Length: 171
Image (cartoon, rainbow, N blue to C red; front, side):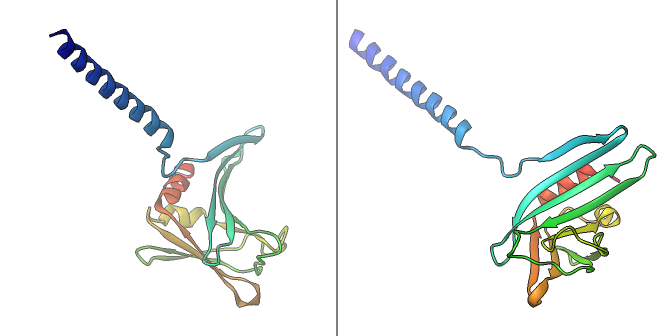
């Protein structure tokens, strides 16, 4: 009788240890699909900057840093801009040029070039995104531009990123 009880307790202990091990490992292995990366900083008294930063790859496997930021001034004015930064030397944007934004449903928007007069570098573009973001549906979206040497830039933006952008500038 004692051997039977001991065998049952051993099995229960083994099953419990297995369940505990699986629970612990699943906590380390499970990675969230989209982690919010909204940053907030005070640039000057009464001037707040909110940023959402993501790295996206274009069709040629070039990595782009895509930064949506909202700058709120003490007087109540706000700017919402989208900045695209490519790897220096491998990407060259044409200025002035509007950014074409196409939602999954086919809605097309145009963002004006904020660096129309002078860009800080040829791999950097910045676009006025305030009115577009208000109208943009939370769905997969494509950003596109024509770059130097007739290369076409197309970046696919997942819905999770659009949702994060809308959290920065809720209107």
